[in-house]
Length: 206
Ligand code: URA
Image (cartoon, protein in one colour):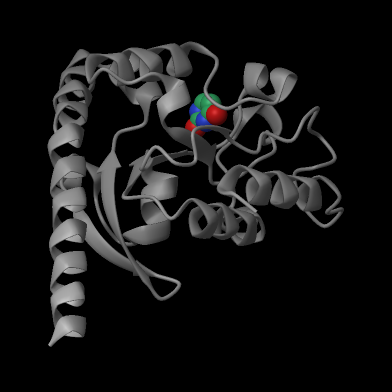
């Protein structure tokens, strides 16, 4: 099975899971969208009104800003994979509760495991909190961290939520400059992987 087939299987399982706490009030499951082989996984907070209506993450105003951030580094939403920490809309767009983040976390972990991204970009404090608890977004945004998650090392880059960039011109500028670092980070991760692969091949030859 390729990554997309595995994601489809997980989505089906999730759509049948009656235990998910936000399921009752939601119109659609908002699982995720994009290219699972693109190397970048973006994780937001949770679906809003339009996402709930259409079943696709980040298609409202924050999503339009996210699209423009991606375009600024010559990427389109179809080049990356986009998902959220909770996959049903919280009532009245309230913040997801810690217990809800845990319930949906099993599926988010499944998505991360299947995609096995080169870089995870967290959008906002809820997805950052999953990998970098007790961290202040204002002091770490745009920096890259190596995080061991379920026995695998991932490069995690915390960023402000795009909606915060729509509320503050300062945050907007900072988010644009954080996004501008992504191509360099991605090239670095790929380069390191290549070096490790060559070293492993040489070790096998000795
Ligand atoms: N905000 C999010 O965090 N996720 C979405 O999908 C939409 C808005």
